[in-house]
Length: 123
Image (cartoon, rainbow, N blue to C red):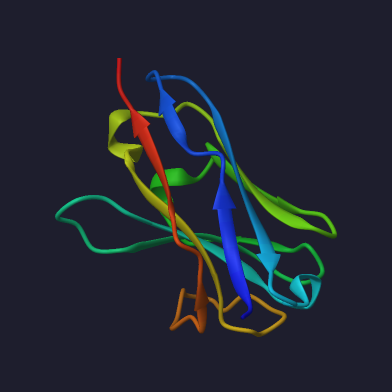
């Protein structure tokens, strides 16, 4: 069964940094697809954050993370580098793909989701 797997979540102090990873498993030809990062905080709607195309072109969807979060990829994983974290960044973070090789102008329906990784920003 093809799947995506996130890792790297945890507890971090305000102002700190964290790096999340998303990898493919179960035979998913990971490197062929654009990968997006989303997050969902308790009581809030899911929010699309960034996307990276098959070729490595990044798209930022959320103004709240511009200048603080960056997305990158290599052959085996997509990384989300998160800097200057605030308590408002506390959420479950998910990677997902719509099985296309490019990023849409706005985050759309995804075909495959990871299980999520919890990020908590607190002192």
